[in-house]
Amino acid sequence: MQVTINGELRDVPPQTTQQLLESLGIDPRKVAVERNAEILPKAEYVTTTLADGDRIEILHFVGGG
Amino acid sequence: MATNDKLVIAGREFSSRLMVGTGKYASFKETALALEASGAEIITVAVRRVNLDRNKESLLDYIDLKKYTLLPNTAGCYTADDAVRTCRLAREAGMSDFVKLEVLGNEKTLFPDNEELLKAAKILVKEGFTVLPYTSDDPIVCKKLEDLGCAAVMPLGAPIGSGLGIRNPYNIRIILETVKIPVIVDAGVGTASDAAIAMELGCDGVLMNTAIAGAKNPIAMAEAMNLAVRAGRLAYLAGRIPRKLYATASSPLEGLLE
Image 1 (cartoon, each protein chain N blue to C red):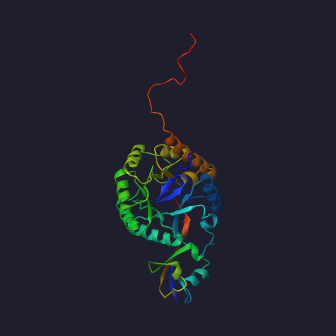
Image 2 (spheres, rainbow over the protein chains, first blue to last red):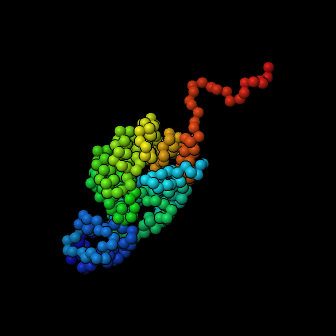
Image 3 (cartoon, rainbow over the protein chains, first blue to last red):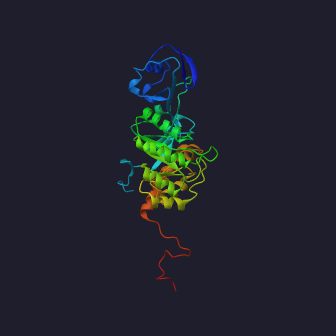
């Protein structure tokens, strides 16, 4: 199925948000995730299964003033 | 300095009155060393998309979160909606309610859009955020931000990254007389004396990024700012002499040779 991650269309197998983060090498504790413009609470990463067409945003802290 | 002279923001006490940004450094290592030298306890960070293809080394790998309080900003937001969205994401990423709210008016000046700023502040306070807004050096806007429930106001000294110093110390003084919440000069500092001036005016703190990160030696400048903020605060508490146009002798006039 296809999901858009940070603006990039990607082919991914059906999986949970937690699994997606792990496959991307991202530490779930250090990011915030939006799914279809709604914030996904960290506790729901393991229970939320991605659906075809989802728009996922994965954000983290970077240097800034 | 009196050890009980603490900066209190929303009930939380801080020993350092210098807050620093973490942008524009040559490396994460340099960032960490500059933070250490600055003595800052509150550091700002930005919220951005994770780069999916680059290595996953992150700023937070270099920062001891037990030592620093993260203050996520909404840099790059030009509408209240974008700023509110960014704050919600920051809270989810960092599990803290502290946010530096900035809503910009245009790219050339990076001056705040105060109309959008007030709109965003209202929503965020209602959602339980501890809001520290970057604002114009406008006492009326600062009072409105206080009335909305912001935890501090952060008027600019000069445009972000300009290094022009405190361009309107009289407005800063009026802001200090107008609001009861902490006043933190945010933006405009170029060198140590600018930070000292802000503190001598009676400001509760100073926030800066470029002045340190852009210096030839950022770590040395971080230490200079640390000292300047402490010196300025101490001078403010000590109470300066009034300015006079003509001289007053420092040595006794009695006992002069005749």
